[in-house]
Image 1: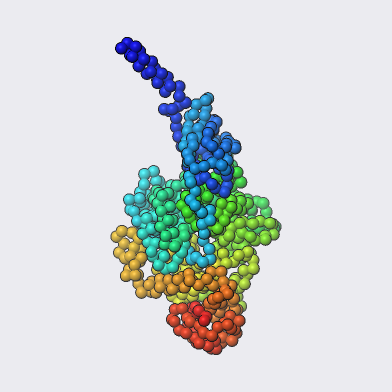
Image 2: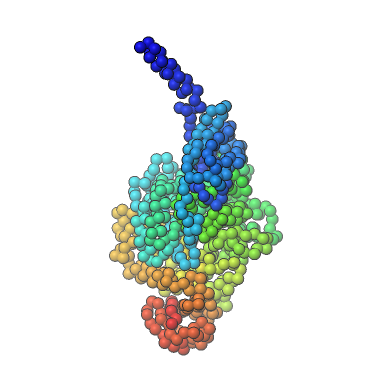
Length: 621
């Protein structure tokens, strides 16, 4: 019995010594952050950067023991609270391995990093293309599907629907609940304004001051909610386009209290705003001073300008995009303020993403009304300085300007419908004009219905043009409800709530019963156009044949080897006679035409009577 007791005592002493001397087994901590939090095996790029953040973690050494994972480089930076680890994972299989951060032979931090199994064929998912039509919505203003999310612990701004620029409570579930409204109109893609965390004290609803690049704002939902939205939308034939901002972050971003490096952001002796003069980027005669002010100045006081020439930050941002594509299955990225970031970084970023996903879509926002300027930022352009952005698409801002003017003017040498013709005549400047995004408004501009003087016939002409000309059409939410607002009167009004999206709303505009007859007319008009567009390949990548407008009547054709569509816009308040002889090269192979909206059949191409303010879309037989 004494021997058994002595043995037990020795065992207890041994266990105590093991626990005491083990490498921080009980006191070992997980780093405050590991980004990305996990990755995938079998990716095209085999180098993986991991950013670790934790108290004095920069003073540790990294140990990893996992087949196929090799530590290539470990970078300590200005702040002792960061460490950047570069791994080669080319031959690593899916699984979990421990990253141990060692100091004096002990693991002071440890993190179990997972390499997930990549979904089959995720590399070859089809991105947004010219067969799609895109619906833009601002999540905070679209629909509140889960009111319990409105105010979350740790969030600096609380919900306030009474304030036009406050948080109103729209969320991911609200989008899911109303996907049938978007799909019913015929849209096949949704561009959603940023959903990432914006833990800012004021004006956080719009999403463009990101405070965490790896997490959805909890007032919208979770990362899994976002992935489920993408999946649910995909089952309905809708692609999700993610809004990204790489030029800046929010000034309450978690790293702003302790920047990894002194050059992580572009800093000035005092606050210096960008000049917004994007022409300085391509100006052969421009000054270095003006260029620096444009590219390195802050977009706003609450938006620190990121320095993408820092290779650590550049790697972080490139991987973040790939992480979201692989994690959520999105089909495109809309890049906010494309020219404001370092353009060579942006080109490298785009190339990196497209190497990983060859059929993915990247759309740049280069807000300039000059085709020569906008075309500089579309990939494949033979630019004067050799620059290639590698972005397949950009927004057609010159055509946006024209859509807001053309239908309000009588025709002159360069006014009225000539504006549309003249801008399209400059398509030779673009490497791929059929990949441009055509739009009449967005969340930053006057509403389209306002721009056409709240005239229903002019709105129909604008919509007809947007949905039948070359390019990828985009509509901003609320256009179908005849929303009207001007940008200079406040962005809160531009971004009004969708009636019916909130519990207790007096009307529900998501339903036919809740809309006015005029609103239903517009919804039906959009639906007719988009369903026709969806089933008509000639309106996707078919050639465009346009004729110089005369007497404010614009005629053009979209055609391929099997189909021809004829479009006539009569921007006059009176009936007009149209002699078809001038347009023979568009219709000469056909004997009749059927109008989309009225069903009227024209059995000869002689002289037609055009109704006043007419929008005509004709299938040639």
